[in-house]
Length: 622
Image 1: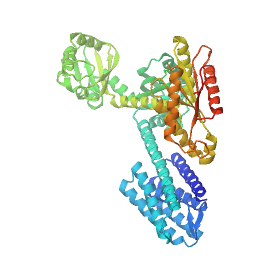
Image 2: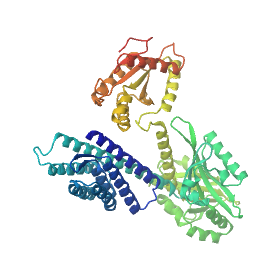
Image 3: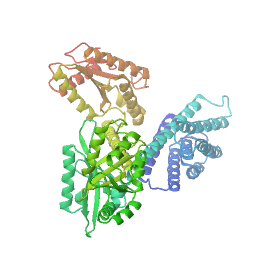
Image 4: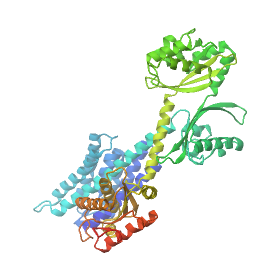
């Protein structure tokens, strides 16, 4: 009976923590005080629910997991949270009555106080394994102390008491570990979201149909929206006139179909009020690791003010001088003979290694030679030679843009434009932040792709990845006449395991099996995947029947060593049955290879489970 009560309490605690995590994830705008009060209220309600599911183990003494939720509230919520949790818990215990009310209230105060001490010791902002263990130890220690004080007989602590203490320790450790993981996940999500949404300029990612997937706050505000999430799912047709939106759409589709990025594309935009704005845009197609197109990412900068300043500078030298003094970018003018006419201080500061050479009257060749010798550009060797100087000097009189990596980690964008009289205007911008933003966007896209390929429960490849891999490897094996083997694995008596231990433990069992599969597939070409439910698969390119049998037996042995308890199995532990099929001429499709392995798996089940069988037409039973 006590074990049934503990199991019911564990289920209640799990439900409460799960509900809180989902609510907190959705209500992430809560203030710190609101979050603490909400956390304390949820843990308090969980404690009340746990006590309602309790069983009376002595006159006025009840078995439940209230101390687990009290400790979690104190350690991870703080004083406000545990005050609310403790008040609800104490009120419920008083209402239950009995001789154990006074010891119960003392226990509530002890767990709350020690939980706050653990929070102070490990820091309020940390969430790690040591903190979780300390939380569980707190519950076990208080439970043991109260058990000794409650019992007057000899011995003061029975085997049942120790088992209950161990159960509470395990339940608290599990709850604390889940909260620790959730907080780490939330922190990582918040960092990535802040990095993207708070980046300067206009940053966005679109899918293959040019729908916004994610944007930063600047994009949302530019379109009269208050949150980035309001842009998700929209297209340019929702934001601009249809003709303009069609132009944007066609350009993006061309980028994705051709695979050629659009770099520093300048274009005007006339708003409804007649105001003209200029933007410079860079867009790159995004592909997954298989080379499949998944969308594009873009960075757009509003250069209206800069355009105006440059135009005024061309029209008037005086206006240009003033603009050069105040603008953040470097600006320089070269005459048709290639000599520097004038430049601002920002232009010289952008090139510290050759700043002394960038003086009015200096020839472009002398400036380039000084830059080469100083080693200020990591894309140019100090001994590049006269050929590089000659080629680079000729580019001064071409309208073009270039990106320059500097020795100090900065990135510069140099834009060269020709005036009507043959002179050259050079604008230098620091684009280091934009480069870093592009790298973060690429990393985010790669991470999203990794999540799409992984089974969320076991951490190994999912069914979609398996289907793609077996189709590819089957075609390769037939093309080059190489070996290919497939293992289909099914967990024995898994329904009985779920019925006996619960679905949470069933999920943990599948995770362990996923770990075992990953441990025996050593080669980069081998693929372990979740096939569906409690079924798994291992695809072995270049492996014949004997090699596949050796690996299957290794898998059985590895699972035996893990010895996952299974009281509903005649083996006393979790086992698997394995069917093996190897590529042969009789298989014309991947589905036939899978069917052969499935028939072998059925034979393994029929012949007693916890064994390996090969396809009937290929070899004897293992």
